View 1 (cartoon, helix red, strand yellow):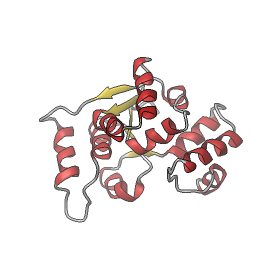
View 2: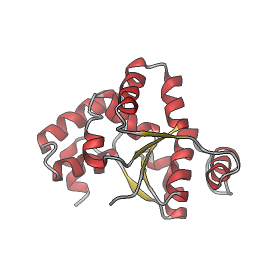
View 3: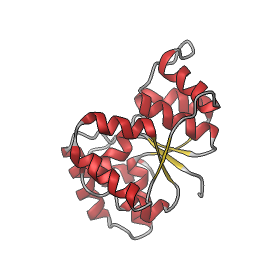
View 4: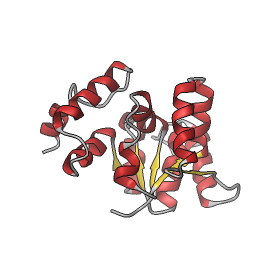
Length: 177
């Protein structure tokens, strides 16, 4: 997989909260894109820890910040997703909408945990999609972390109110087999 990976706020912040963001560039060097809307959501959260950590990644060139240009296909889709979705689809947040718009229009991968809100969009647009669990599994497969370390990271994320779809990394691995 060499496509750009567009992170939404919940997936990115899962790693930022527990200071494990270094896993991301080790797996996806040169491919991590943070939509401006996601960065803005982090800024608006007023959690300086998250902002400081993402700013370090930006300063080190580990992630790229990307804005949606007015009048672009991404902008049209963003407006639809955040203001007037098709019948049967829900309005979603700016970060999710920006990440989806970029993933669809730039042939990228969406990194998001919020399947409840975006599953219909993933299906409609046939979006390639990864979650925090998928990322940790890739890290384990590449010997960046062990399963035990994955469980520790998972537990830390859960303690930070991140919902990851399983009670442990081991459970996630069993479910994904």
